[in-house]
Image 1 (cartoon, rainbow, N blue to C red):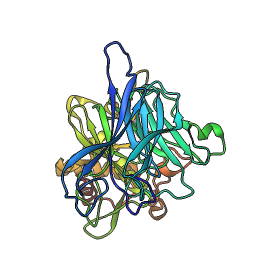
Image 2: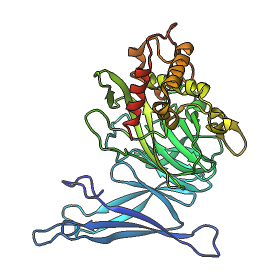
Image 3: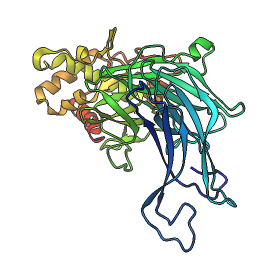
Image 4: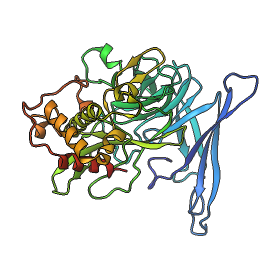
Length: 411
């Protein structure tokens, strides 16, 4: 965007490039291009200008390295990762009284400390995001081999500093901010993971560390995350499909889905689309605690009752398998497995529901108090067992089918 004191903002396309030479291990030169699509008859429209579809380079800046990623930041600025450094870029000019020329400058604010700054993401520009005075101007940076770190811009000092990081080694391929303090990552061993920041902790050590609250093996390498949905929003949902459902992300303020009876069934939080190198397009959505509890119980019951092809265990298939360790899946629900419930025969459905009732962990003791808040927002809780009712009775096959159909409607 151009100068904030103008009457309206104008949109630009920002492109990062790199010059690749055979004798260089990493690019030593690159450019950041500012492109304007001339749909209103010029960058500064006049009464004599006619609309067209020309894309013109408004300005450019030379940089010392390859531009790997660019994202919008706050107050009309952008962040760009150039080799191992994250830079803040500012656009000036083009305001009232000027000659219409723009100038893109690399600000002094920048952050070093990465092996290769592969990706940068922020919540600036999100439709639902409005920065209040109390909120921080933060972004996440994905390093090629050192996982995710959080950088914060201090306007009063004009500096960009790291405030938290994940100390696990993850060879990243994609990252996304689910909320101000919850982050999603994909790595090259076909795994997904979710991290949570604890900015309000008393200890500096805890504040500077990102805790892992979700692990899941997707089975495909994700190379892109983007906020959004696969379906057109309507009055009851603003949803997306669910190959994997993350119940560690925020659901506060999410949309409420209604069953046919009109009763609120679930609350949707973050909605993130992903694309893989195999051509798969899927979605990861945040659920409220009540819905996540119900679907987790259904997932456990289905893995116990249904014998999979090849007698392969579901928990082993979805276990997080990294370069040096293997951990069980947590914080995620397998949407593919859940939605296969409606394809079962009636007898198998009844066995699954019977197992859910025998376990007695499909429903919280206090639905009203817990359905408004997702596990991912609790500052001092991880994926721990909650308080369940002593007897979880009253569940039938129709209830489960209704819930699974609500999930299926998110496609």
